[in-house]
Image (tube, rainbow, N blue to C red; front, side, top):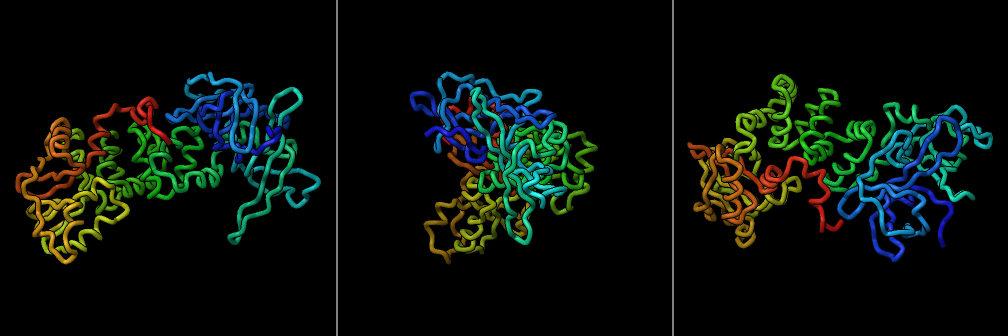
Amino acid sequence: MAATRVYIARLTGLAVLGPDGESIGRVRDVVVAVRYDRQEPRVHGLVVELPTRRRIFVPMLRVTAIEPGSVTLNTGNVSLRRFAQRPGEVLAMAQIVDSAVRVDDPDLPDLAGVDVYVVDLGIALTRTRDWRVSRVAVRGHRRLGRRRTVHVVDWARVQGLTPYELGRPGQDVSTLLEQFEGQRAADVAHLLRELPEKRRLEVAVALDDERLADVVQELSGDDQLELLGKLDIGRAADVLEAMDPDDAADLLGGLPENEAESLLTLMDPQESEPVRRLLEHSPDTAGGLMTPEPVVLTPSTTVAEALARVRNPDLTPALASMVFVVRPPTATPTGRYLGCVHLQQLLREPPAHLVGGLLDTDLTTMRPEAPLTAVARYFASYNLVCAPVVDEQNHLLGAVSVDDVLDHLLPRDWREDEQLFEGVRQ
């Protein structure tokens, strides 16, 4: 049975279907027109995410039924133009939920003069066939690990949801962070790009350094610089410390030299040193592409110890595919490079065997000055996903992984180009 009243938290994530049941996408947010008075806001439409990750706008006039598992439209022909928020429009989930408000409901005297927080909005179908926001679910902050009681009040009883008040900084982001839990950093980065600028910064500030660093690494260069520039300089340095050195070097390489040096100075010297070494190389060479932190072992390391190292969940699959064996020291630039051992070889050997007896010494190494085209040909020729970079004195400087090569071969704006995701299922 089609609903005439629904809460947007339940609406978000529902499949959007055409009149013949064909899948169009999924609801990601609800667009409402918030007023300066207390009249109920009109719902303009839905933000629908297509399988290609493009987000489009579907007017509420196109919606014929909202059911427990789906939203049905009266037509399968929808505009594929990317959603752009218009003046006066507000995104319910991204901008209203988590807002601090006051309630003046005589039936709830305990809430008088107390800040409470929006957790959901109820929308209802009117006699004129318009959908309007009629109810607001609110609660206080959690205390002593317990959730506070949720109260549902009429929209007219809530103060603090005008466009001006929603635009003020410092809004809570608890609900948004809950939506990001368990998602890959690349998916969180995509969602972050879709948020209004104010909310994007509030989420960035709320994320811990490690999580934010992972997300920043998945943003385009321009988005990275914009976000980093809005953070306090001390926080920006902390995030750079948490990033992979090669990604941090790429980001700093896009800044004016004096700004990059200021950030490097604030970073822990142990974290900034490998970044400084990478900045000595052109970004489109093997030296600029490499990470200085591959898995490096000595010849006396056992197979069991090597496998334990590559099980590190912080390693990408590419870097875990190969270990590099050197004479001490093992920190890059290392002692004399001896060879590499492929993960498949480690899996075939007894745990007590030493990696020094399993070396692949025939694999060609790359020099740090090798250009991007030569690096790409190297991977294509040897069917590898990771490769060593060695200097003229045969010291291991780092390793290039295929994901970094692809990142530089693709167009600069590939993360924003939904056409590149054609044929990719979510």
